Amino acid sequence: MAESRKKWVWIVIGAAALAFGLALAAYAYMGSFMRYSGDDYCYAGMMAQHGFWEAQPYSYIHPYAYHGNRYSLTFFSGLAGLFGPRANAVLPGLVTLVWVVGLFLLFRRFQDRGLEIPSRQQHAQNGPPWPLLALTAAVVVFFTYFQTQEIAQSLYWRSGMLPYLAPLVAITFLIGLIDFAARKARFSLPILLGIFLLAIVSGGFSETGVAVQAGILGIMLLAALVSLRWWDRRFARWLLPVSLALAGSLAALFLLAFSPAIRDRLEGISRAADPILVAQMSFAYTRDFIWLSLRGLWLPTLVVLATVGVLSMLVYSIWLDPGPTRAVSFLLHLAAASLVCFFLIFSSVVPTAYAETSYPEPRALIIARFVMVAAEAWIAWQFGKTVTAAVAAQKLSAARLPGYLSVGLAGLLLVLSLYPLRGAKAVVAEAPRYRKWSAYWDRRDRVIREARQAGLRQVEVMVLDHIIPRVAELNTQPGNWYNGCAATAYGMDSILATLPGWDE
Image 1 (cartoon, rainbow, N blue to C red):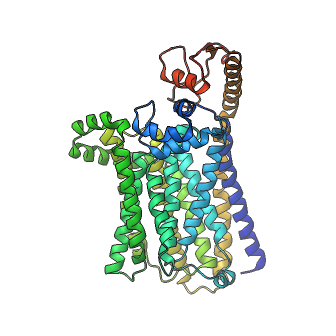
Image 2: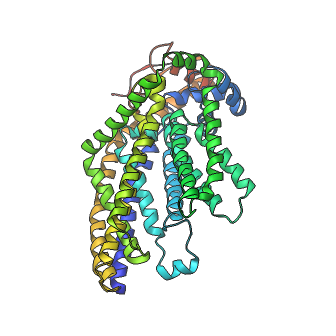
Image 3: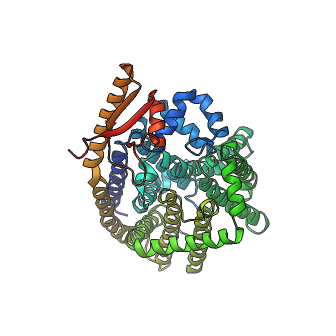
């Protein structure tokens, strides 16, 4: 491949990375306006009453305004609360960065056909494909956010992000740690213990998260068992670490289900729940989610497929050998990805169908959205690999294949990279309203703190707009539980939002 053409490819890859990076930065920017809202006040109130460490067992044992059984949610909410309301402004960007890094590291582990990682010498010879893998990770995260029904609840709002987005981040690192343990010549006891504990922590964010986690681990366990019996044993060494992760997931499920804080609620659910009806509802919800996504989000779905497909073709036309990949192999990947996608989305809606006999809340659907985007990315990657193998099979010269094909693919990638920039523009469209809300929230916060320092026990403050859809704010009702949580958090007897100012 001519140096000028190779340089052009890398310039386009850099431009694409910049486009998707800016799009994700737009979400971090919007999240930077966040303060306390809704349940955040109640976590802050618990911290003010009991302190960080005492709040952990107290929330788990005693019924309170939030889901105290979700022990990881309580822990990380309290941890963020140690840094005050402005920690909520950092979390969306921090979680996004950690997730992209986690997916990149996971993709890097599985970039080849087997479980073997290329040596440094091989990387130097073939040219490192890690920038494309990092870009692929950014693509998956961006389209998960972009297609999420209620991104304000799922990412910006701390009490919505931790129970549903945080498990996805934790599961990413859990799978990576499992694979890391499996590749070592000997199993390491500290790593195996870390897998078990990480599974317990990851499963403690929410029932939806632990259901999907168990589903993923179940699929990995099945792959290990099948590999042990019929395949070339590539995945057989997953057996022990995956089993430990499943044990940790079951322990997390036990801790969630048998928390004294939700004992009465759980008993009422168990009496009313019909397993057959739950299965039927979950199947219907899964079918509806997938169908509505394909029908209503067809354009971003096509962009996901095209972008990841192009990245795959670039990888296999320049750096990696696609091997004798055939169409039947792609069809098998397509069928397997579709089945896994349906099963994991089904797993994500079962807890809500069981507990509430209803369709999941919009904030919980980010898990199903990620599953669908990941399945689309996997299908597109395999399609790109298959197409590249088919082109290579036409006995084109080695110079012509990476030359004309790669330059054309790079040009297509450049066009596709305009889409996240368009998405970023839509994301920041509400920035003036968010900026106004944060400024008014900070002003109201100062008023309350000054009143407390002056020895007052009751205060009336400005009414703010609902920045998070369908999440209540402080209002005029003395019995409103968020008013009570906020009063406890600030050390007051009463806080009422009665004063004008927002619309002036």
